[in-house]
Structure formats: C-alpha cells, structure tokens
Image (cartoon, rainbow over all chains, first blue to last red; front, side):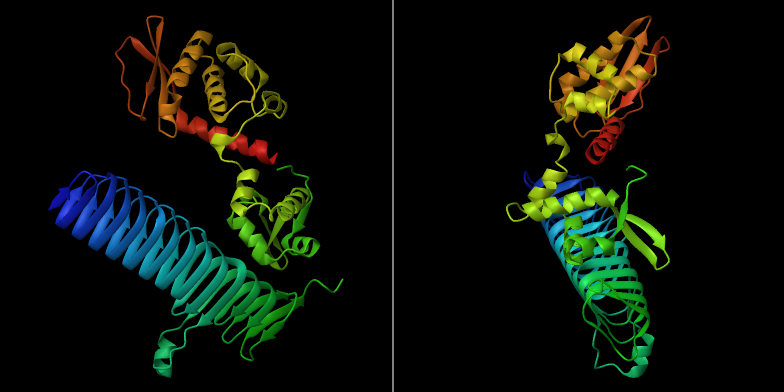
Length: 244
Length: 214
C-alpha cells in the first residue's frame, strides 16, 4: 500500500512510489522509490531501493537498502546493510552490519561495527571501525581507531592518530583463531602517532611508531619514539629528521 | 603544471615547514591543497609523494598565517572559491590563454563590454568558441544561440541542456532543449549544430582549474 500525502510517503507491505521532495518517507516491508529522493527523514524497516540519488537529513535503515545514485545528508544510521552506488557524504554515519559505497565516502564521524567497503577515497575526522574495512583508495582521517575482526585493506592510510589493533577475543579457542584470521594490508601508512597490530604494509611513516604483534613492515621511517614487538617483522627502520 | 617545476618530497616538506602528518592530511581533506599537487612517484623506497615546491611552500605559509583568524572551511573557499562566486578579469583570461581575445571581443560586441566576468560569461564565451570553431555557423547564428542561452541561463544551470541550431531553406532557428533528447527534423531541415551545455561546462571547469593553478 502506498500512501502519498502532500509531504510524506508511506509504503506498507509492498509498493512503488515516484521520487520527489518530501518531509518524511517511511517504508515498512518492501518499497521502491523510482527516482531521486529528497527528504528530511527516511526510514526503512525491511527493504527498500531508490532509483536515483538520495538526500536525507536523517536516515535510518533497519534491514537493507540500495541507492542507485549518491547519498548525502546529515545523519545516517544503518542496522543491516546499505549499498550506495555513487558517492556518499554526511555528518554522522553509524553502521551496524555493512555499508558498501561504490564512489567515495566522506563524513565527520564514521562509526562502524561490521564491514565497510569504499571503492574510492574515505575521509573523516573520526573513523572508528570494529570489524573489517576495504578501502580501495586513501583512508584519510584525523583519528583512526580500528579493532580488526576479519581481513581489512586500504591502499593508503593517513591521519594524525592511527590505531589498528586486533580485536581481543578471549572466548574463542586457538583453533577458531586460526580459522578466523584478522589483519590489515596497506601500501603506506602515515601519521603522527601510529600503533599497529597484524598489519602488512610496505612503508610506515610517523612521528612516533609502535609496531605490534603480527606485523610485517617493509620500511619504517620514524622521527621520534619507536618500539616494536618481538614477533613483529620489520625489514628496515630509518630515523628521519633531527639528525641533520 | 609546469614540467620543470622543482619538486619536494613529503618527508622533506614536513621537515622544512615543521607541520605534522595530521595537519597535512587535514588540509588535504578540507581541500586546502589541490589533489593535483600530490604527485606520486616510485623511488627506491617504494611509492613516495612529492609536491610542487614553491607553490606548496607558499600555500602552507598562507594557511599557517591565516588559520587563527579563519576556519579551515573559509580558507578552502578562499583558495578555491566555488565556481558561482568566481570572477575573472578579461585581460587576465586573455593573457593567460584561457580564452582568446577574438572570442572575448565578439562576446563584448554582442552583450556590451564588462569586467569582471562571471562563470556564466565564461560559459557563454566557450559556447561562442564552440559554435564559431566549426565554421559551419554564421556570425548571426552564433549571436542567436547566445541570446537564447542568455535569456534562459538561470533555468538551464546544472541541467543536461542542449543548444541546437536548425536551418531550413536558408532560414535558421535556435532551440534550447532542457534535456539531451534525440531530435528529428523534417527532410528539408538541417540540424547544423548541437552544443551540449554540460560538456561545455566541463571545459569551463578545466580552464578555471588551469587559471587557478597555472
């Protein structure tokens, strides 16, 4: 059933509604918006798709949604999964489950539990992930705080504070741990404070660098403090700055 | 970007200026430093990033001096103002080969001389260039297209609009289609020229970038 009053759209059960500009769009069940959508609030309980770009001040996805264009707005909360075929930008983005962005992703704050896929660059002030991320371009964030669970990758990572730690899982035994390997692969990682675990990278550059367990690093260039765990493999460490 | 410009590696840049990785990446995020200035090169230590030295040092100096009074967003606007708000001195556009003097003069003949020029003027000048370049249109026909564009500029902004010139038995008609459509004409009518405005706008952006960075 599609109920389209002047300023809102409500789809209950299954239905299709054309795009447009609304105050609120609510989809309970399965709904399709067959065009670009602009609204103040967008809520999906179930599954939805938008055949175009979406601009929503506040969007809450409980279930799954796919956007055929870009997504912009202020707050996005995803409990389930979301696919954005264009670029995505916003202020606050919270994901429990998965988010895949075919373009680039930019937000002030990105908090994800689960998985995050970005096909181009990812920009944020705060980037907090518990789980896995796959960023094909540059991950550029002021504060990067990752608890790895599963395999992650990024071409390059840059920012002020970069902490990549393995998620502690006391409850599972060694066998499970072998099956479920966690780790990060990146070409270069650059930051002022860099702490890494289970990371494979060609180059790590930083003011202060700590290389923890399970790391395999080709070259570390460090200006200040440098420490490495016993089981970390670092091919070369170069001190830069200061010495001249 | 000039080919012979001296480059500086990121490492040396940070050492020389005393800025941190955090600052550099923040300024990149906020578009204070253009993407084109990050030049990736393979060195014996793997991939390294280089910058055009003089321009980068000048930019960092400006940012450091102004960041206390202005927010980073304001600074970004200052370094690369939004297209709609940019203005150009005709003389400068000509001197730096962004557009030719002939085109600017033709444009002034049609709409009267003015300075500075806005982005709409630049779009119109490039439409003029495009329509004159092929040699298929008479000067009057070009003027007709430009008049039409001028009257509807507000409405077609950011749209996939298209200017079309038809000629039938020596009499020409200018059309402005809101969306790029397939256009058919009767047998005696010739579609002389189609100018998709979105692609002209692309050209405008490319040239404005040259103007900014050149």
